Length: 247
Figure (cartoon, rainbow, N blue to C red):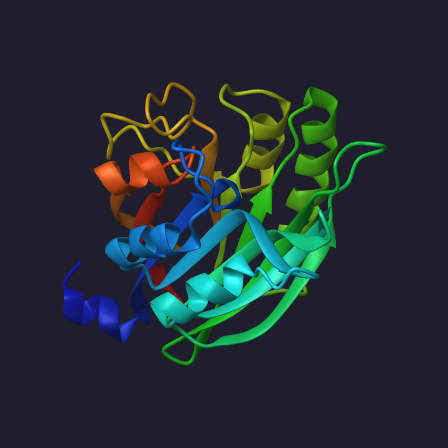
């Protein structure tokens, strides 16, 4: 299909990234939000979903605010819990306008508090729903979270294309993957990347960061950002996808 035909059918290109920043603590054990900001600038994504971000707190350290100031991107946080007196959780940063945001509690029993963050992004006057998640490390915990997440994303009252990105803490096709794939389409990285592992950053052997979607989308390009800077900045590598979305 030609670009002209696609334009007539409201196809729009958007570049999205998911990045677990590990509290901005690098492999050298330095906590450096400015270094994470440099990685984000190099990615040049329209929207980036981050996990494990330290927010506002008593000491005045706010990683989201610092990264947003350096990159010039707007941001919104969905805190899941407190960490040493600071908000802690997911953050979405965007060059595009964010029209609304919400979050869904994914906490299971006595496990660490988790949530799913939803941000509605204005893409050329149309709404793209982005979901940013960080699932738990226990098997049954993820099973519960996957079911709740799938229902949250599949809510028919929320119409239009949807992208689900984040750290799913599942490196094999387990219960969470199976359950999410029943209601959502999973992005297959194999046609796009020779290296698909994102964790741990220096010598990655686990594929924890995934992308699911609902609606009419075309994947144009997928990148695993493996640079000297990104290898040092966090224990995860950023995963970037260029999409053509039909509204």
